[in-house]
Length: 148
Image (cartoon, rainbow, N blue to C red; front, top):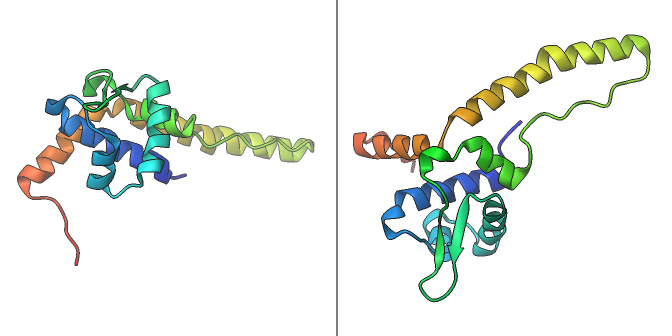
């Protein structure tokens, strides 16, 4: 299980908006340029975020996107669901054979359901504000890692 490129880009874009919320709205091209993301791809991502009510937009020359709520009210789970769909390991089609069905159910309950529950707990308890705070702390403390 991994967060897709779409999910990672959505996270990066929303962190960028939250960091720049003094300006209230940010254009897709500004976000794309700052984060090395294709404008067209980012527009698709923002379409899902807008449908989910996470961002709003203003059209026109001074338009752009802004968060529909405070960053501490937007969870990573909500964001990932908006761009990727429900974030879980899908249930296996259970084999019809009795012995295999029992084994399959055991794997589902003991491993997959447990992973889904733990993952859900993590992503539902991390907010956009948590990510912004971590970014600010690392930037301030010089924890950023640069590789050459």
